[in-house]
Image 1 (cartoon, rainbow, N blue to C red):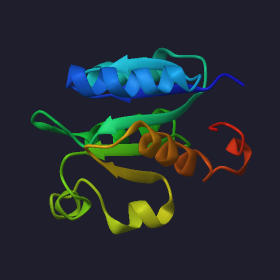
Image 2 (cartoon, rainbow, N blue to C red):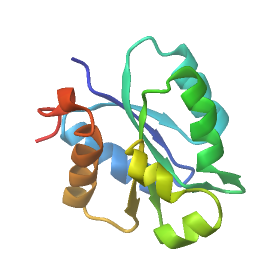
Image 3 (cartoon, rainbow, N blue to C red):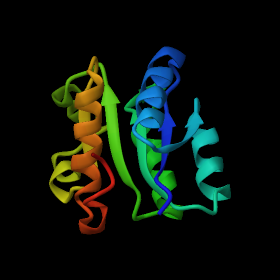
Image 4 (cartoon, rainbow, N blue to C red):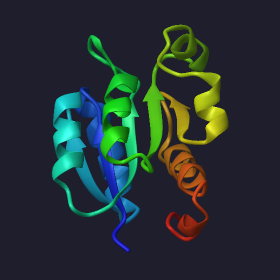
Length: 137
């Protein structure tokens, strides 16, 4: 099965870092720098996208707003939010809700992170689907 991940981040340095890690781990990567671009990629891509890795705050936009729009087309899509802000700040801003984490549709990883931490977060997020057991080594 093709392992496609969509990376949504408006910081090219962070996006490049994440993409390099993903490609080294054998993932096929799609990249978007805006929410509109991410939505277009999801709508137009016929291959299944296994995971969305998104910055929780995109300039003046909320990554959550983008995720909610993407879930209209792909409700099964797992999401890993990355942010320099702690989870408590994202909850207080309304970007994350405790029920998001409890429902296991959304995971969170705080920046900065090391490659091994990102891969572990990806594995834990994908393992929320039993079929993804062998997807990340």
